[in-house]
Amino acid sequence: MRGQLLLLLAAGSVARVEAATIQVPGDYERIQDAIDAASDGDEVIIALGTYVESMIDFRGKAITVHGPEPGVGIGETQPVVDGGGAGSVFLFQSAEPAEAKLAHLTIRGGNAENGGGIRCEQASPTIEHCTIENNSALAEGGGFTIGDDESHATLVDCLIAENQAEYAGGGVYGAAEATPTFMSRPSLPRNPERVPRPAVRPHVGA
Image (cartoon, rainbow, N blue to C red; front, side, top):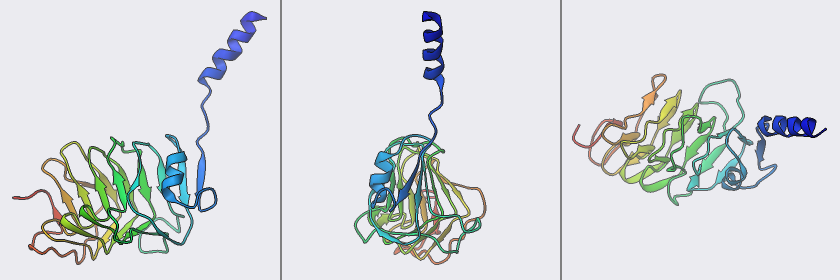
């Protein structure tokens, strides 16, 4: 009997806990609250609508945060996350791996020193099928900043448009060795800078 009990305990210890699906706004009104409740492997699904929220931090979690998938691609109806001019909209700053994914969202209205739409530092997330538009930065990376050599973000089929930066990288800015990986050709129309430079800026001085 004791041997059977030990066997059952051992089996229970290796049983895989099923990933959870967390709904916004069904389970949580705020995206940040849903992320805080999530664990590695979980999904946070955001319903169609507009969410005014900024400084949304993945907190190092290997989770997927995404809207509905209306046929894989961009330019279709997506939930809108609007930063309201109160900082970066999304943050990756705690060694998030490639399994930390952001997908099927429109990200707009961010305004920060660097990375108005998304700021990535010491992290390597994956951004898929997102529209990053109408964000601004006081320095670099109106749409997206990859701010250090430890970060290697991947962007897949993203539209990055109408963002602006005062200095460099109106669309995307990458510091030194941290240039982003584009899994398909990005669409980068109209991302102006006060100092004219390419929409994708590898680093100052390039």
